Length: 349
Image (cartoon, rainbow, N blue to C red; front, side, top):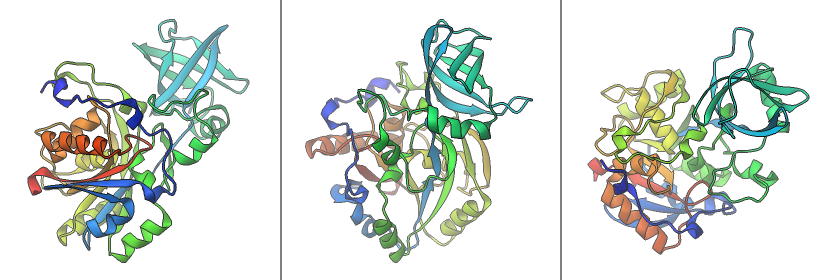
């Protein structure tokens, strides 16, 4: 399929720069056989008794670092953690600016107690080995790093203290993401209590979202796009609850495209989920046959993105184009800090 099929005009003013307050005041577009406008507080009434919501509990780290290679300034954004070295040192793939002048064995100094050696490079990506173990690196990043906000969120000086609160979900437990699973940003104590009252349960998985999620699709045909890889975990307890829900006739509601991608990566042909601890580079586009997920909660995505391709696979390209046109006509807010949609599967409508 041609990438142009997933293009549409999105004026910059639709891209949210801050989230609404409170978080459950975000708007919600229900995309089914028709389009209906709601808020997140309407969600319990839109789901069914016995449904299971699956959240991503990854925690975002301040993954952007500024340092020097000699006298030259370098900025890196960590995006995928690798297994530690034989010596136990942290290793990360990172996007670097400027990348062209970096070469293997170069050392980037970020502070007196933090530096990294360049082990290898590929175009704008480098493999870094830090002078600290993974356990030592995380607390240093909290002090030395900054949140790598998506490029469409405009800040003169980068992310600020408010972003450190806003760009973290209430489910964040396991450190390792460099981008938030933003469909989970809309939930409050009030909304979670109302969901529980409707007998809508929830569980979590972990997909450490990488900065590759923001990379544009540059190829003319989507079959030529190389999807980034991310590390994910589904525990045995979550797998059992998902399988039990399906057996009892409940639906699996993925909260976010990250949850959906990991569930579909772990699902057998019959939709059964087994515990999972591995990388995934699954690229979902129209024609994909969904095995596990019955409905999807997700924010509004950018044109020509792998995420818009995914939602088009889930609910149909023409339906999603109509939904996005409706959203812009009705002033919905797009992307990470924006509003939400509840998508029903096209083959179930």
